[in-house]
Image (tube, rainbow, N blue to C red; front, side):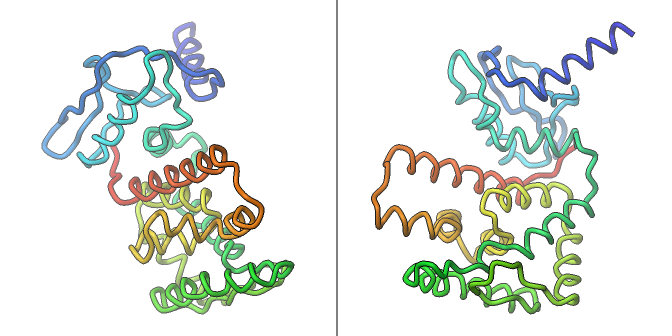
Length: 257
């Protein structure tokens, strides 16, 4: 019983600790586990998830990216909050909330119904026109790419009602994807507040910078008008790009054991 309580304590500390973790390793390496799997070694010890599972991935590029996250940490601290690929891997392997693919898909469909690019700011006509001009082509692209009927950008404060057959089509599209793709996609969607911009980036209709710029049109408009606090706004934009990039990379490369 004592051993189980100690293990539970370690899991809780690793999952929920609010203080930064001190850097406890010197070297970081990627090691093949077999022909198709790779692990990350910290001082030759395998990296483990908060629940104590050895982290292995079926993608060498992803393993190398995770290794870079660990090797780039400062000498005295490990900042997991900024290690997005690592935390995505932990979530995918441990699944702390015991989610199913279907539950993640349901969440994505809810986000789709309230997608940022469906809503126009009618208080500032110049901004509203910019949003129509920039967001309209993405909605048109998604309509043709997925064969669905989507709302056009409007000034309503209420989310549009999507046709049942369109929802069913998008559900089938999401359900055809694997667990890791869904988690990576959801991470990017939560960052951009837009399913359509995320899908456009996944399908190479947009690059990450374009997707972030389209998701933050109103903030850009306001800063162009009133000025920007360079260090603050630059850091926010950089962090948003990092989060979206991590989600897209994880969706593309992740296949975990």
